[in-house]
Amino acid sequence: MSSFICALLAAFSIWDYPARHDQHDRLRRQFTVAVKEGDIQTMEETCRKGTALLPEDPTWRYNLACSLAYYPTRRKEALDELEKAVNLG
Image (cartoon, rainbow, N blue to C red; front, side, top):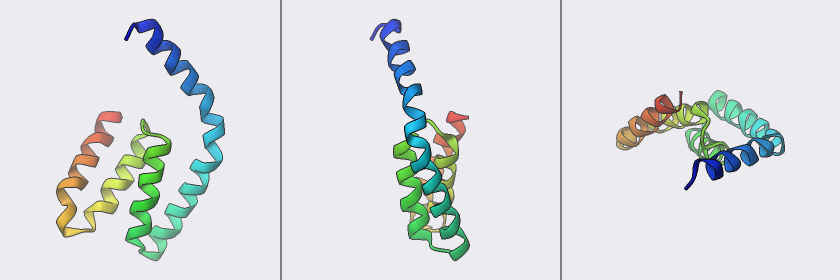
């Protein structure tokens, strides 16, 4: 793909952020409640929705990694998500 097309697609995605803000804020509040309640399943589900909404956001990836780390059998997946978070910044 040419650099012009990549730049154009990036510019269009920036304009989409205001439309995603309300959904991001709702997910953030839902995640906070799940953490306070110790609801690991909801924590994971909310983080997966957050990463789908904002795939380039390192915080959602980090929170997903933390949520997955609660499951002893999913630690490898947790470390993979943590690596993605670090790579995103």
